[in-house]
Length: 559
Image (tube, rainbow, N blue to C red):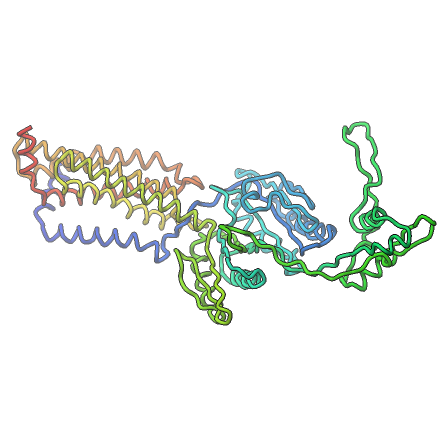
């Protein structure tokens, strides 16, 4: 400890070296903050989660037959079966899979229809495979999407969320009054989504407008031909959907089993979706009237072409269509910033674009002057909310520490010294995240748990500084020695306890640093402790040397 005392005593008598050291510390602190905007340290709300299951959501074109959906789903199953990490899977054709948080948040859990299918996939446990689930999903995604042969067919992979479930990593909520133009704008935004690196599984939360044919029953003709509405309904259901003809009872099944009657797949499908082909199908369907005569169904109904418009969602009493995407092994904030620039560049020909709240955009059509807004939600909003709340918690922690120290020592400068040394742990946290990222296959992000680690270190490093202040103050009061010598002795005396405490923190968080979720907390505590100790043993003595202790000593003597 004598060497440390001599070193600190020698340093405190070198004003030029002290200024250089403080300046370098300040520059290092600023540089550590700049590592985030320069991309050396990536920021993400929550890290990736290594789970044992994921769900594949298949959606074919609107009004597709169940046969088409089954073909696409079977293609996905065949490709998944080729991977040794996949244990088993279950197909829910036209039905929703068992509810989970991710599916509910993405409005997928309750979806039903012949154009929908859910495939729940179970993979090997973490100990039995060499690749994480999110890396596996990333490698599977491109191969699986080859099964979507048409532009209207989408295949999305949804993993269990590590935190609160959200609609998507990047969500663009598009607001406007004109439904048709709103849909066209949403399609343009969707295409821009696809051009941004790092964004996958782009989805538009609305149906594409499509043509339909409505069958209007001629009341006069059915009365003249002697047939009933019930006959027409039954033959239509039996021909295209299926009609319950009866039930059977089975020995080991409590509920009755329904018997469906329908024509075969070849005669129930319409390939060209034309009114002429539909009329030909209706001519082949005949009814028996009360006189026993056959009547073609086409004689009783009129084919009327109609068009189903895009559906919109109302949010805050405004029409809205959402476009979502997932981030592929990246933090959503970086492709989002690229997406925002791409939107400005691509849409500027038709719209006057203005910046709105946060990262939102306001679009004004140059011809019609119609106003549209693009508001970003999803993980971005969650990131803003959580980090802003943690920022408030950090500020409150610093303010409370400053107030307590100022009230205890009756000197604001000592409180500022403690806070300055405490904040230096951020240098180690940022450097630690950068170094760990160099040795990991996936980017090691600065996450919410890393931020929590920084707040924790504020209190730990403050304790180290308080020990030096209190011990040096006692030496001045009891021994009456020189202030510089008292600071040097206090630093040397408290070095061993500080190092032991720091070692315990670092060793205790070694295993935590390898955890996929709380790894940021472990790395923050390990590397942040290093710079916090260095700040306490080098920077705090320099600051204490310029503080006037005389008034503090007089106050204590009076008490």
